[in-house]
Amino acid sequence: MSREEAEFPEGADLRSVFASYAARFPRLADLARSIVVSRNQEFADPATKLAEGDEVAFLPPVSGGCHTSALEITEAGHYFALVRHPIDTRAVIARLLCGAEGAVVTFEGTARNNTKGRPTRCLDYECYESMALKTMARIGREIAAAHQIERIAMVHRLGRLLIGETSVAVIVTAPHRRAAFEASLEGIDRLKKLVPIWKKEHFLDGEVWVEGEWDDHISPAG
Image 1 (cartoon, rainbow, N blue to C red):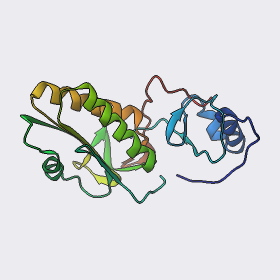
Image 2: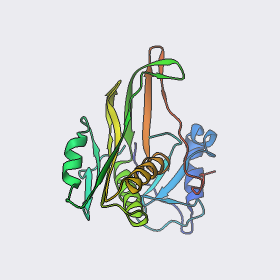
Image 3: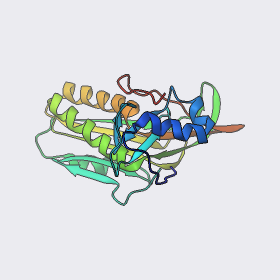
Image 4: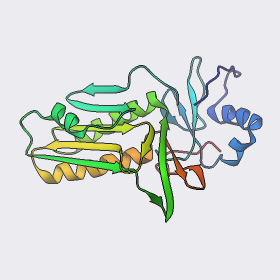
């Protein structure tokens, strides 16, 4: 993810910032109905006014950057991380266990060998790391408050993945299995629609960044 500093007149909103960059980079204008905007690492309406020192990002409609030093968040026993090595789900489970759980549900998303029959060689994942971590932690807190669970972890891998390797893991511990299953399903569904992570698929005859789908409540830039 490229970065630059810029100044805009007083009263400018996020829509005018996008318009300025779309004039410089016509491809942005073509994608205006699909790109969403964040302000200070939170999704924002394009009509939001700028304030001095704001950090603005344009996020493309891809499923799943800039790099930060902190790649994990631990709070209230929950765990959220971005890693560039194979995900060790047993180690994550071990750090969640507290003795009160009667169920542990692990969801793992893996790199498959084809997309609609087109052979896939490997995948690359990148993201807006600071916002991705912050969003994963918020999703986890909300799920923990809404379900009868003990702890939740979300771990997403970045970089190059080979076929069969785990790209994302959502792990939930709970006193009873139903709550654990429901929380893990909600976790991966919300992660896919809200966390700014980009996936590139490499085929035998080319490569492509894969378009995903933002959550319905997020307004497009144009």
